Image (cartoon, rainbow, N blue to C red; front, top):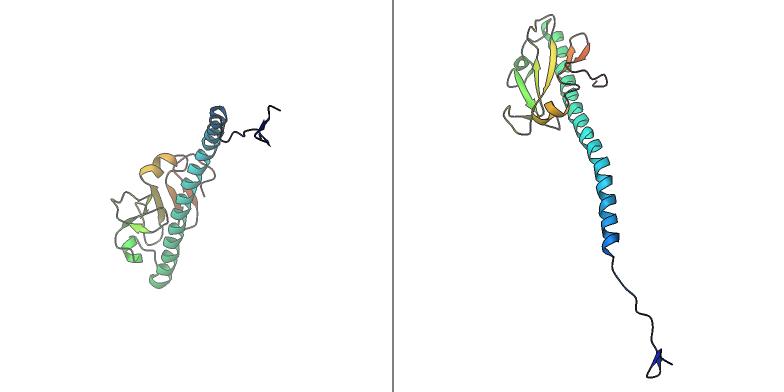
Length: 157
């Protein structure tokens, strides 16, 4: 009889919402997942920027091959290959940017000592790319296709 109020049964009251313990557990789980995922994401970004530099190096190699066919020798300066300066900066997408741009990730240049018979293309990391990709460092490729890096990494190319 106690459960009846004026002829109707009282239904048990439901609690809605979350307890503080449940919320703290969810926040802890999210924190652990973020701690695992974020470093992997950062390495992915570094590899992507390195890939853009490799793509531009291939463009330089292609232009050098065409220049060799047309002129019976390699260009000793990037201006002879159609770039505006003897070295240029690229952003994370491989697009040319100002040499002082905050978006630059690599400087593309011909190494010192380029001749009409031999050359080396270099991609020198800049700003955060230089510190986060120290294991690879400067990417190099010679006119014969020999690839090297200034760092100790083995999977840079």
